[in-house]
Image (cartoon, rainbow, N blue to C red; front, side):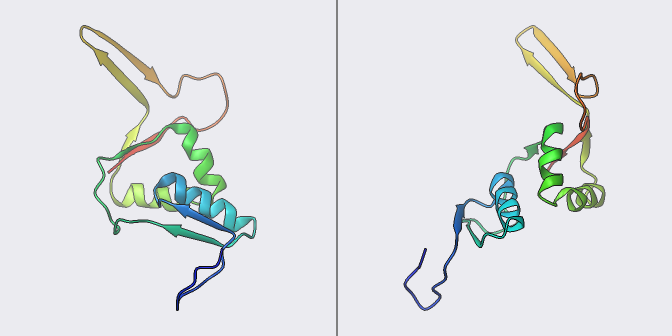
Length: 113
């Protein structure tokens, strides 16, 4: 894509949104040799309620090369470890322990501020 202005550039891929999905997609595409431009309307750090990550996300972050940085940041900022999820609806509730599973892979994640 050629953007016709004084800062014109060619990119193989343009990603709109620099959240977890956009950043991961960009990292994976760069690993494959594509030139990538990420467009984000907000300035970082931006306010978000928080990201409730699932353990399976850790595999994707590892593949994109983010896992060690995420682990370092989780320790630095004392993110709460997340081993499960608790759901409530009126007088009913249930808990899912991520460590009780039938497949290989991560069993723990974090609640990211």
